[in-house]
Image (tube, rainbow, N blue to C red; front, top):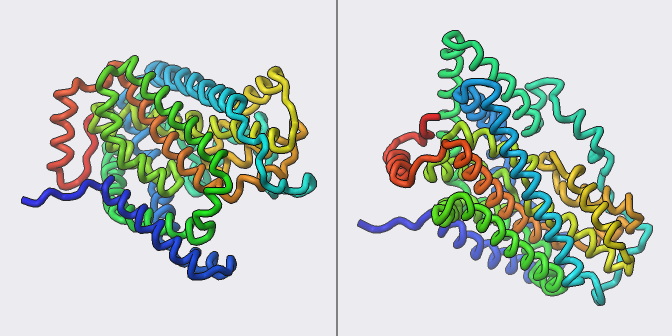
Amino acid sequence: MKRKLPAAAWILIAMVIGIVIGYMVFTSFPDKKTATTIAGYISIMSDVFLRLIKMLIGPLVFSTLVVGIAHMGDASSVGRVFGKALGWFVTASLVSLVLGLVLANLLQPGENLGLPLPDIGASANLATSKFTLKDFVGHLVPKSFFEAMANNEILQIVVFSMFFGVALSALGERGKTLIAVIDELSHAMLKITAYVMKLAPLAVLAAMAATVATNGLEILLKFAVFMGDFYIGLFILWGLLIAAGYTFLGKRILKLMTLIREPFLLSFATASSEAAYPKILDALDRFGVKRKISAFVMPMGYSFNLDGSMMYCTFATLFIAQAYGIHLTLGTQVTMMLILMMTSKGMAGVPRASLVVIAATLNQFNIPEAGLLLILGVDTFLDMGRSATNAVGNSIASAVVAKWEGELLPERDAESNARTLDTNVAPMPMPA
């Protein structure tokens, strides 16, 4: 019997083929406008895939989270898990921000850049007003559940689902019928997810081809130092996250890293954390994390635990300041870090959100916003690393919180559950 290639291998193959196709387009059509037009047609497949994922996210988060909270039993259990998850997220965010700050000061990626700087008066045309603390708090609670679903506002969906799940739990026997219906909805959404994921290699190929066709590989050489320094930071951050996971999970953290390799590569290739969400849930099921924990922690993590994006905010902000020869004192940098800590929360639903957060920060510290134009060309390549890091951080957070709550299956039971998942015709999560 022939052994089938794992999905992660297909994604890697698709990435390589996509780079080759993209570079062929880039060299064959030197006119930037023509290459961009062709790239637009190539990216249709990846755009459709990401739209399909976005189509699933709202119902999937709602159904899995409501059932998970209903099975927790009471509001105090929900509050306890929320507190533990939030504590982990805040700590991880601070570590990520500090790491970006330290590396930017040590490596000085913006010094002696050797590139023409954009005019100080230029604008990156990014809306920054939506990242004030006041607006974030007001945005937290949905005006309408259906509006939140339509706009894929994950944090608002989480807030409504928490109320809904606690209410169903409080109803006792009267709520069991509706809980069962919503549970079946989650199974249906997971089945649709399995169909959509079959398109992942094609989507990865298209995304890589379109990116390289537009920018070529030369742009990577121009920003080699900046990108290299940033990815060094990501490697260090991965090491810190895995070390933190090892502290609580022991050697099982290596098993978790093996299980999430496919969603890791998927989020890297598509530069989208959302693309990996359904696959991470499945990987956590196989690892032994009960769904009532993963369905609660993961959606929260998409708004509060974007480790890669957090590190990028401090790193890129200091890079721009260094490029323009602006010296920032240690006190100013610490203030900047704390502001980023607050303004970056809930940025997952905003396109190119890291850039918007950085733009808002630049304005507050009189650093030319035009500096964003320096990194716009390579931002997609950087976003790949940020998205993959976010996937790693949220996976580890879910597993650790499950361990704290006593909701992590022993290894033998987790392996048995994984075999059950493999033999089921429909992808069924473990009982909560």
